[in-house]
Length: 315
Image (tube, rainbow, N blue to C red; front, side, top):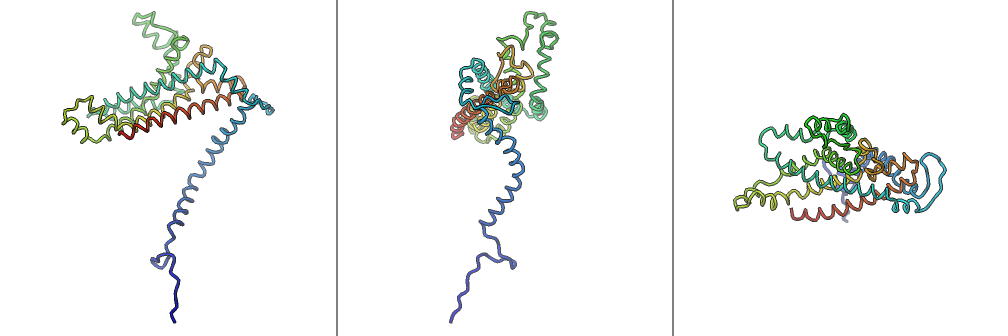
């Protein structure tokens, strides 16, 4: 009579059974969840929950102070879409957002190409290029505000000292140029990170491909177009996405430099939301504007990302 024994479920090493792979994976996931739980809870309470609540508030006439409010349906959205002030803020946001994304990426790529060719003191010049990114937008805007002051600003003072009195102007008070001045200041502030991302990708381009193209008789322009540029596809996607998101949500520079003025000329969508929600005590209206901004940012970012991701296949 033979006695059949059950097989052991796990291999034994040193007298102890090893846990099954699925159990180990579950345990690792539980440990990882414990690590991220504190930050996740704070993020949900401080970001996700208020964002969801803003959808509800966008359907009300809440003033932001009084606990009592009434539901007005989609009246806030109708008022927004028929408001000339809102569409002016949208136009400024497009100019500053897309303009800064294109200008900063073009300039940053050019600076990165020059830094990549340096064989001496590259670290020093890389630090100089990155320094503006270390200064907060609020502080940088404050410095520019004093430099561009019409009466005692450094820019107008230098122009007058050089004899160009007609060139001295109210840089932040002229309706025709104030948005362009904001675009320049934003581009000056946001270029450091973009440059370093391009530089890191340039230094990771395989040199054997570059040398092979040169041996085949390719010029510098052809090497950049057919070898270097496709290799930078990932960096272009990252930089354009980050710059577009930053451009859609520009607030600090507008708040410090112009406060949306003269009048409402230089308002952006982010500043418009702040102004009507907290300055004019129309929190429901401001919440509706915030929802519109979220939809615009999400749609444009997804579409731009999809297009730029498609060209990465060529890299």
